[in-house]
Image 1 (tube, one colour):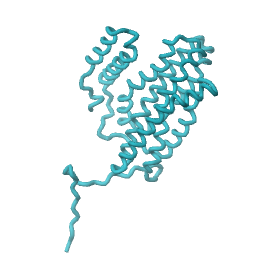
Image 2 (cartoon, rainbow, N blue to C red; image 1 turned 180 degrees about the vertical axis):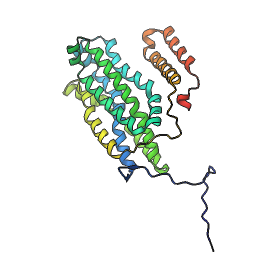
Image 3 (cartoon, rainbow, N blue to C red; image 1 turned 30 degrees about the horizontal axis):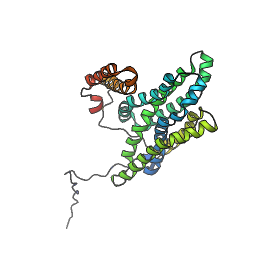
Image 4 (cartoon, rainbow, N blue to C red; image 1 turned 90 degrees about the horizontal axis):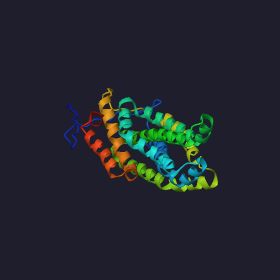
Length: 278
């Protein structure tokens, strides 16, 4: 008597289909090794949000800058990070998450090295060292904007559903540790070495992350996403978030009127954007 195999229906009504096995170097992907690899970059991105707080007086004294200029060492990073989070995440879905993660880590490392050498760049070029430092911190923020969403997107793809909640818990815990340990690590480095070491400490962490990513992280992308870039939508979204974040950062300095104007520009830009909604 011939037996027929029937597909097992899921609760959603769809038939069960086995997910394709992700491969790296002709070997099946090991999700926990993938998580370990992407956590190095994510930890750096969160760490650099808070590690600067303790070093502000030392940087201000070392570069002979005023407090307003020094505050932009923090603001430049946070501004670029917030503005480009969605955009870089979208590019990763289009052109490959592993590729974007590696680019982000390399950019973050080079920017960290540039921050440490900002004073030397100022001496060579004749431009203020603080300007160099702010510029390199902005580049750091661009790299960090790729590390956070892409690491989460990779993790969502490689982990099976039954283990995903545990992986997200580890990912969130590492982010919390980075934010909490930033001032502690920053204070230790400033007291024992120099303020430049709060940037140089990123280099070995990033080097390990790049090697692990090359070895263990598979290349993935969203096949349902078009590779066409919606330039008007991209510019609208970027300017909208830029105005909002800038108003939040500079609201006290500029006053209520200009801050409200920036928020109004953000609200006027808040149309349904194909970049976000596909």
